[in-house]
Image (cartoon, rainbow, N blue to C red; front, side, top):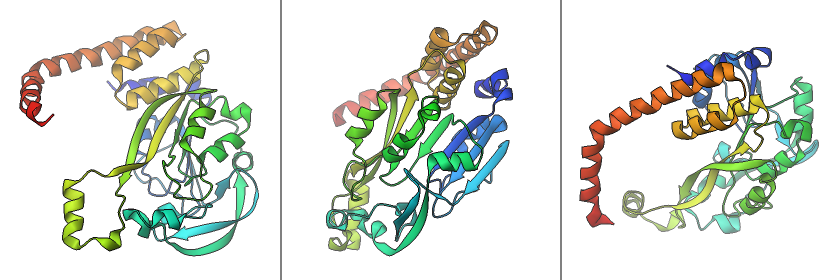
Length: 304
């Protein structure tokens, strides 16, 4: 049974579909939202070219090439060799030149663009709430989040952002500032990493490049960080947080969260029973594969 799809059938989502917004969506396939697409509105925005979903059927899609910023106005937009690295912030080449990925951030041209605040974008598209927000705005993530009206921001269930650890862009958001700000209304849940090598790619031969990628560990340079609303008294938020945990296959956490926070008894018991079935299935699989896991652990002891 697909528990996520069962959750999407709950009445609260029939009245108000889930609003999924991705700022900086170029290259995204939205597969992580496929199980909730049937009751969701997808808002895909990117200043280069908004991704158009080809695999999943949403209730409605808004694909827009606006440049969302923290305010309306005119600004410089830096188009880089890798379009996914283009930004309203200027790449800090003095620092980047010492990294393998430096060629991706070389500015091809600088153009003047019109920017729109996220609030005006939402108003223009008649959107008055967001449930799940993803931002990949090349150093602008926190500025955009701060600018969202509290009425909307305080009812977002999930926020995914992509802060960097180094100053690849001038005046980019610091990850420490992001955590400090987000802790007011959100709690940290997950972090994944993007990597590169702190070495100029002009200084290594083809053979050395192969050795580099095959034998050495890259440095962590940016992260995909997920924050969940710290509210537990709003059933819609609780259900969307539960959907997120299930998407991440965190079944034990999902069961615990459902037990503690779901209010409606009509579907709470059913969801917990379905989660118990998932966990029991995992137990059975684990019993069968445990000898293999144990053997691997013994063999890898010498590598520790």
